[in-house]
Length: 322
Image (tube, rainbow, N blue to C red):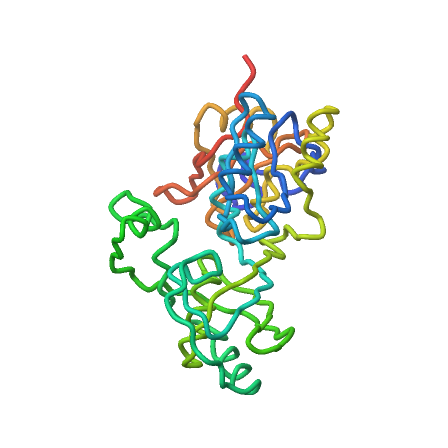
């Protein structure tokens, strides 16, 4: 029997028609879209949820500074294994910047290093801001979670050590100016992963010649997760207390929708779960495939091996039941 998809002389392991997605997460395995309150670190939010989840793995995808509010994605259970794919998505922010003030952290929480008169015009501010559109390189702040030789940069900065930081490529897809009330400027930005809004504020001040720091930041979206759909920590506490927190969880495959999907039958599902490869010579548009079981549950990610037409498990989310 030949493959109906690629014509190879074996039955095709992948079905053409996907089953309906099992949208409801099974147990505490999913993604919480949290509206992070100001003053909390991302780790603080994870710690709060971990205490309520009682032994379930918890992690976050995409750090937010204590000053910032808005979308923070927290993964529970099996979904912790897809957090790396959530961080790849573009982000949207609303930022407020104060011109004329330079701090060591590039935001209002830091030590003031200089205060300068602000003599620029509104048009100069607008022109400088729009000059950031497109691709460029950005030097991360000294106070950041980036590791150097295994140590977070902010820990080195607190010891008075300011190591050299490599500039990183970023892209600003769009910028919308909301308000100029000098010395304050407010704007929204849609940008690639790894873009530091604190650094953007600092660089804006450098271009204007007066310095600047970030005074407020809200993450409006991370990929398809939006602020208007986020829940507060109080709502999560209530959901845990009243035992309906699963209703707040997004399924783990919400992090994987940019990968092509295939379905398998029960036999091939178990082959994947036991680490076996499957063979199909069809050309796929993405390097990974999300795999659905007959009941619609996302069970694994497959990656192409070095052998043409051979797909092997990259991550298995649902282990076989003995």
